[in-house]
Length: 104
Image 1: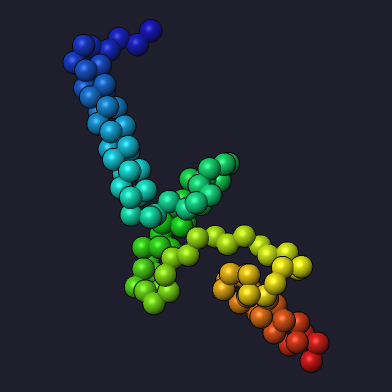
Image 2 (image 1 turned 45 degrees about the vertical axis):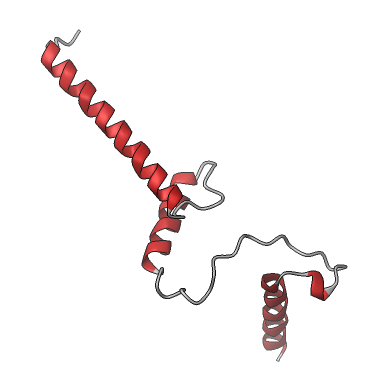
């Protein structure tokens, strides 16, 4: 058994408490400022969150003209064109362009 003095246990307990509270504050600030992705759960959650937050911070000013849009649901082929979101319409147009380029 390791002999730890009362002072060492007290200092290590305070350091652990300070670290945990600092981590909780950092998580709340990241959530408040939109640095946590909508799909942050799962096996790769921490890596996705770090990548998403760094990209949001580094490209914050370069994308200022485009608003942050929620993830759109995919439109089925039978839906009307006007009912689709602008993002889905753009995806359809880009796919048609890439097919056109590939065939020519």
